[in-house]
Length: 294
Ligand code: C2E
Ligand code: MG
Ligand code: MG
Ligand code: MG
Image: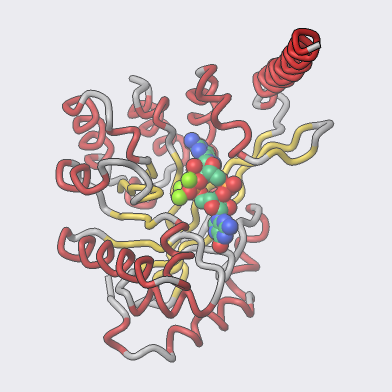
């Protein structure tokens, strides 16, 4: 009967939900232990300045190697870390570790660290940055903090004050995934950013459709007039690189230049990567007006 099949469907739904919750609880328990067990590590993806045609730094990206499940993407555990508050402890580890590793790089290279909205609202963020810099000896101007729009949607005065305290350390602040939120433009007006990172979706779009091209061009122009650099995220092809350079982006990041790499690959990457020469050739082929230099 309908009633039977209805309750059967309900039971099935219940079981699936229960499984999801069980999986989530297991993941949470494992994530709590991941730090202590040293299962977390950082991969680094190069950031490339188009005008200078060179790598200027690396973005630190969290990696988790689960003993049974293998590599788990941050997309699949950052949300859980935020909900449980674990992100604060994990995020502090990320800042400390990124500063320590970057202090060993050639001193013209910077490191960018993602700070979650939950961590941005934590009172210990600024002290954590200060002690990471002090412990590692990394000068503040070699550290960048990346936040997304949602970090700024809470109390305006508090958010502004945190940004100002961070910048007072010489640390720069980037707006990540720009264009994906609801109030991108007004936030740029109210908060002092050094860099806008244009979300991958627009960079992909810049390939194919007219509106993608127009949007990237408009953001790059906006950045220039506000004194901010603009990084195109997710650049995968030479065509995309040429296009975003022509549209006025100052910097690029993406698989074309390199996938995220582990710390021991950084020095070899900087000295020998043929891919980098290929990128540089694409840039040299651009008319000079297609390159902004800052
Ligand atoms: P995000 O900060 O916007 O980082 C860029 C993401 O795009 C990274 O994914 C990177 O591997 C990926 N990516 C870079 N170039 C390309 C490309 O050419 N094509 C494609 N398809 N993807 C590209 P990942 O490492 O999986 O990180 C995803 C997100 O997780 C990050 O987005 C960031 O929001 C978050 N995340 C990563 N590490 C941390 C961390 O240490 N703390 C916090 N709070 N969030 C983090
Ligand atoms: Mg980022
Ligand atoms: Mg991003
Ligand atoms: Mg993102």
